[in-house]
Length: 196
Image 1: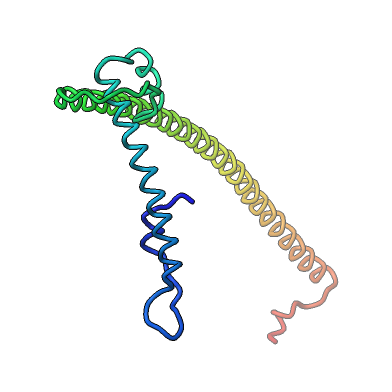
Image 2: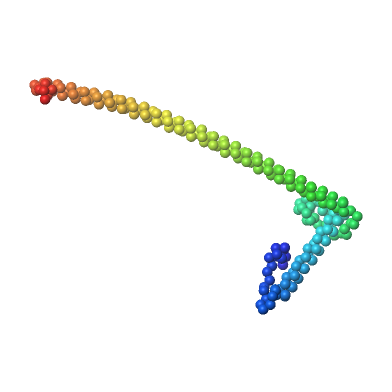
């Protein structure tokens, strides 16, 4: 079982009936798990310290250089060696240099990705804007065509109305003349002359 700090914090023991406290066997088992995990962590820590000391002392710089660049921090396989006792400043300087180089690489990679995303976004925005302008021009041209068609239709309808009114007036006037001429030829006195 891989024991995590959350496991220790959230561990709950069963209460024992008829007496105060937790089940001693359960508590002992859990503490045994903690001891096993801590021993593993201590052994791993010692191994990593030895690898770091071997790297800093220059025993394995060629073998450790490529894996550290590919997978940062403690991924470089280096032979286990005794830690040098006289160079703590050189060890910390090497670690700081390695960390700074990894930091610079990650920052440069982040900036490159940022610049790529910005240029992609700008080109996409330009394409969207160009498409919107083209679509806008097409809509305006379409509306202009529709307006000119409607204006010509209105003009046709006005001409039709004018012609229709003129024809209707001439027809009614013609009928009135016909009515007057038939009334005078028949010898009848017009209604207006009678005085009704």
